[in-house]
Length: 408
Figure 1 (cartoon, helix red, strand yellow):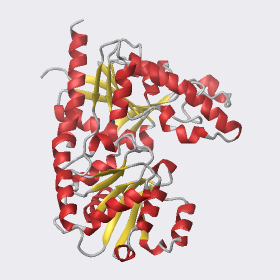
Figure 2: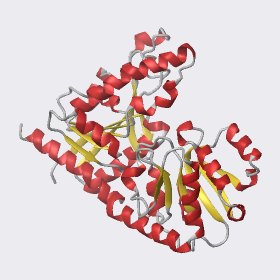
Figure 3: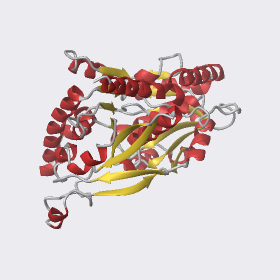
Figure 4: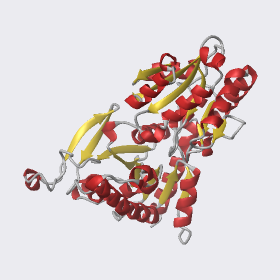
């Protein structure tokens, strides 16, 4: 048997969970299925107070230097590595000997991150680098940085300006770029119009054996409007969904429920607003559902709603569609690349509660429309986003880069 090619899979804050580690897990599964790659998992510090880094404000760390430690994540071994002067955000994107040493035995480096700047930590090591990325720091933080408050707010805005330049540098230096949405695809192409680089739409896939449609009719009995995510994040804009729910006809609200789920619930202001609207008893939150419970929530939902202001992808959309649930999503970045409007789901303008309510009502009122869009949603996932299909994009990139390296 030929030797396996070793892929260094570099991910910020792998152990903290969330969307980026979920993509890393998907890539690990794709590599295992291919049976010709070995994965070395590496987690980079994303915190100013990381215990493995050298901190300006912790003189005791000056002598120990940047450290690394072994751990286990999702049943897989990984190495966590700190950063030098970790209070400064841009320092976390720099090379460090501890990281270079770990990557020395790898044939290729695959970076998975929210914004591209992280790839700077591995550029220039004489190894091909592929970058899977969701968005840009400037775009991701635009609402936060629009109105900075106090010295800390202006400091964070300054860090964003530096990170934005590092984002562009990474996009112009890596050997391949895999993006999760169409606007990022256009941006990466524009930035690299004067060089040849593999740039492709390559979102993660979903396990279509795990996320499957229910055999029970969705509009029988109480009808759940489901929304899943970190709902304390203002970018998720769960308040828009509450406003849309309030706009539904009273008779329809009487037989429906707004069902929210995720690792963090809505803020206290959301619940006060629900109370003021007289809808508190019509809204329920499920905290941190396990995988089996999450699948059941999808399967029992009449419709899935994504009211976000910004989504690099929206993995929850893929999961809902895999379960045959029709989706109504705002045009917030990721959904436009997944949903074909009025064919396998609905797209509405960001911040438009009237349009969101109208689409929700249409899907709650019509069994025929609901079933048709749900059926087409499942077909879309099977054709484009099943793990086996989506994983091929990454394997193709790796094979191409490794073949190019072998020919040197």
